[in-house]
Image: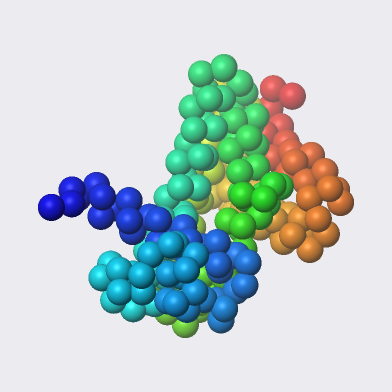
Length: 202
């Protein structure tokens, strides 16, 4: 009898094949038959794990957000271990949200596609709200940490500052996709936004 871990791996395999198709062709181009061919399994096996396309959508969105969160946390741990300033740790982690290579470009397209579907699907909308709230809380906590370390001026509203930074991240991500990763130095632009909040100790 297959182990539970095997089931988890199979679900992740299907979800990642789904994201590849979604990134390449958009939501309308994805069917269970196309997905089965992409994942190298049968349609029946997909339906065994996902009763409908909506269930698959929610799982794929959640899985994509989780994997992105893991990469952000890895960046934070690396920066903290290296003793970097809080502003640099934040910048390095937020750059993971910018579509500056093939993997992050595909992730961006998937997130945008799923967020568009979330406008009409409460289950997806809940995933989007949760992931957005987690990211906002993370950035706000980093700003608060910056205050404690003297990198951010006392009295700065951490939540408002975090919203401004995240709005810049989203806008830059859109510009990168439309203009190309080499069109302008997106990391440098984001660095200026972060530096506008982390003014202490500079």
